[in-house]
Length: 182
Image 1 (cartoon, rainbow, N blue to C red):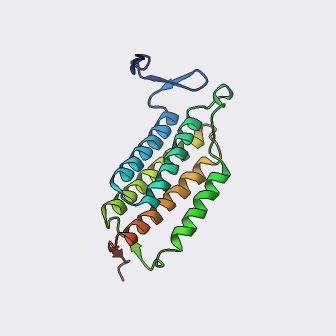
Image 2: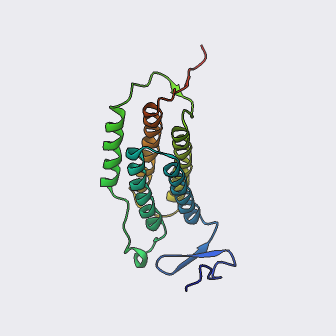
Image 3: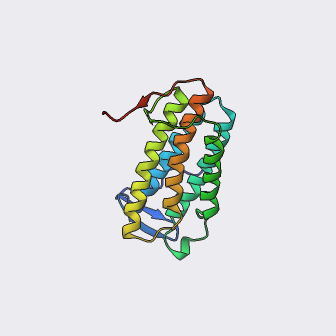
């Protein structure tokens, strides 16, 4: 049986694809760590949701996030034999947003995160996606990253917002509005 521990990271470094060693606090490792955290939060949403449509979407998103993690972990040509985030993936998110939005009443105010459990967890997921997006933007200012990653994660956070509204709508949970003070 293969051991899960390798001891190669005991001095604060980790290996990327293409035999590159970097510090565990590098911008790249932080970015894919936050993408991994988002993936785990989506798994939490799936474990609590009874909604087949949402769970099917979430599984696809989790697979996309594994692709993004592999893409981030392969910064060199030697590591480039992995799937990458593509424009088609972004377009698929946009299509899904449009479909779900078509099933919802129009927004007339800001929405407080919450509603039912699934909706609230999707709002949490959206916040984690925004943090991952900030990390990707920071990384992209210092290193080359796939140009599709930032638009993908931006659109993903939009989708998670719409999915939260959709879950609350389907579960009959009221959305609490917030309005600017007059």
